[in-house]
Length: 254
Ligand SMILES: [Zn+2]
Image (cartoon, rainbow, N blue to C red):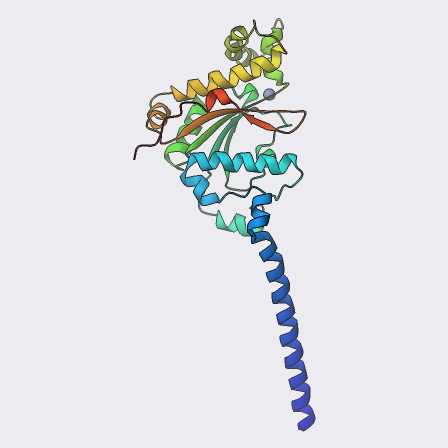
């Protein structure tokens, strides 16, 4: 009897020690990840704040891209628990209107996860009715307040608009025709004609969305949503938010 009691006591103690060890192990790991030093070093911005305020959303994207180019990606919200959490709804904090180019995977270059980005991609991020409808859906239904037009250097669609090949097959000519005005606007500029046109194309597309009736225009001038432009550098992985699209932004009404 005494022996059995002693054995049970030893087992119980052993179990408690193991439990304490695993708890302290978990605590050590999470306190490292949650520490303000770690958050600052990884440019962490709170997701709910980014969803509520597009200016904070912008900072969140900038921080994610910094992590990516510095080799510090944390690949957030890409686990089974996030899948479960998003089972019946989504609240992406940004809409990205980007190029289809396989070298510009949006969640990777901004180091974001499931449910973070509402993405519309076509070659040269040329938009037409279906794309506009998708942006309006995100704005009205999902309450996403930030729209980023994301071009990239060495864009094939823009290059085609600069080079103007003859007898373009199929529907590809539609893309080229949409980008041609941007090419014409910067034909006098020094430097690389394709990358100049990439920037101008993004600026034109941003202005086009800011003027787009009947939904985006009003939301934009009322300061309810933000529409800005950026260019991803294929060589470095860096996203440059274009100064031309960050100036004189309408302020939200108090
Ligand atoms: Zn492209």
